[in-house]
Each structure stands twice: as structure tokens, then as C-alpha cells.
Length: 159
Image (cartoon, rainbow, N blue to C red):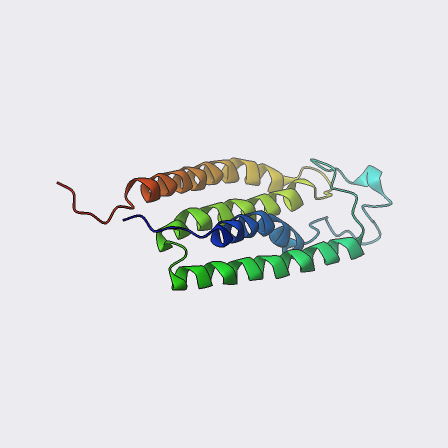
């Protein structure tokens, strides 16, 4: 018998997955090199970036981060409540957590790849070197877990 997942739980899962990169991006913070006497905003000739960051003021960044955190917590609580009440099959948690992990990596990657550095951005190279296989592994695991949920949701005996 297949457990029916409520539309509210589906929306909460999507909101959780989509808000995770924003919350992690905000929590990870600015990763610009700190050099006494130099400011990446004013001394751009001394710094290099792999990619330019979005042009967002510090106040807007805090507001976005706080809103995304509240939304993430609300979505997580909704999913826990839906699981406890039977409106969300608990077998959906592995793919949801996998996608949340991918979002966390995306948030860290944005901060790392847009950091102002003096010289080479070693962190960006390490992120690409080790992050790419990690993302592939997590994505594959999430796909496999999703297929398993769809394939093995029957509680009827086989045979």
C-alpha cells in the first residue's frame, strides 16, 4: 500500500531544499582575504576573484539570510510534523536530506568561488577538485533513494 504524501509536505520539502543554499550562503559569510590596510572593495588591483559576487548590500544580505532561515526552520518543522502524523512517508527523508546537502554545498561554493584573494584562490580549486565528486555522489544517492521509494513502497508480500 502506497502512503499518500500531502501537498503541504511536498511544498515544505521543496521550500526546505530551495532555502538551504541561501541560509548556508548567509551563514558561511564573506570569505574575502583579510589583509591589513587593503580593502577588496577599494583596492581591486591587489585582489582577484574567480567569479564576481552579486551586488548586494550588507543590510540586504542580513535581511535575506534571516528570512531564509525562518523559512527553512518552518519548512523543516512542517516536514517533521507531516512525518509524525503520517502525511509524509519517512522513506522520503534520504532523498530530501541529499538535496539539502547539495544546497549546502552550493551555498558554500558561491562564497568560496566569489572570494577576493591575493594570488590564487586555492579554496576554489579544492572545492572543484573535491566538491565535484561529492556532488555527483550525493546526487546519485538521492536519485537512487527516490527510485527506491517509488519502487518499493508496496507493503504487500512479493512472490
